Image 1 (cartoon, rainbow over the protein chains, first blue to last red):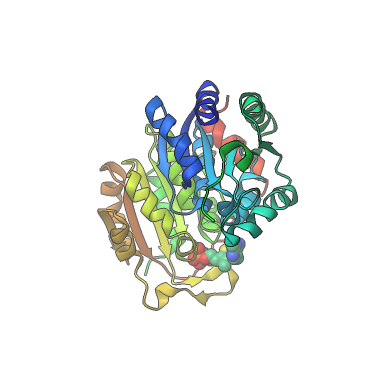
Image 2 (image 1 turned 90 degrees about the vertical axis):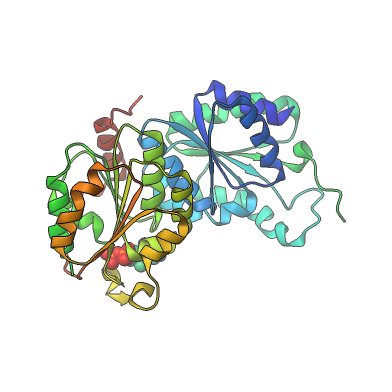
Length: 168
Length: 188
Ligand SMILES: Cc1ncc(C[n+]2csc(CCOP(=O)(O)OP(=O)(O)O)c2C)c(N)n1
């Protein structure tokens, strides 16, 4: 299952900590990470601080992943643009997307639609996971490209992959 | 009131190879003017991120005491980071906030610490137990050995004047990064 695969690939790539602000999708990943027991979990109060935290970890020689909902990208833009990108700090930015297929909440749609445009405007490479069979290869490849290019690279979890709430 | 450059100079005399993260206002100018060294990480923007970057480094490197030199304006922009840092409570974290009660670098406009906000109380409310407010250089000098030797995390709110330091740190972000990581032995 995708959440388990994600945790497996993180571990295989020596990612030692997870900085997160949860949604239910990220919650599923965290369950596997807790079961695995090899990650330091860092709960964020606002996503922007996560950019600073993974930057500090990288400077110290440790790899961290940053997990957030699409809403959280809006809270993180300046730190990405002024810290991670110019100082060339690599990390995987795992984004759980709201506002596409099956959305019940109108207030998630605008950030959801803006998500890729914001990443493109920042010049952050991004890849979207839509099917189980692409999770492992995309995760692996995105992590490798992040550390080779010394830049954050985003992987977006679509609602086709993770499902949507049946709330109307 | 503390002269920020004098306090920074005094601090640097008591450090060996501890990493120092300097925030984007005047803290980076004072740090460079006091002593430029590989273990200094100068932030040229990303207002508020010094506290979070210092936290990440402290968590990744429990073998190093990590010193953050922050400004009141910058920490006011990222107050939530205090709650995260206090929750993790790395004992090797020393967060010094130079509180000049203003956005000095943009012309000295008053911050909320010139009004009703109290950063030491905010830090305590966030969950820090070791919190000091120091308003003279003598008090700063007296407190420093304890702050540097006893386990933290520490938050030190130092009330400073608005004098400026003359020095300007290197401006290339990648140069700053590479030499910092080399000094910390964290290049792969
Ligand atoms: C997001 C953002 N808003 C505003 C600025 C402009 N700015 C740069 S430094 C600074 C003031 C920082 O204040 P403080 O941390 O107290 O340091 P001081 O200037 O007093 O030394 C401001 C407003 C900025 N760089 N980024």
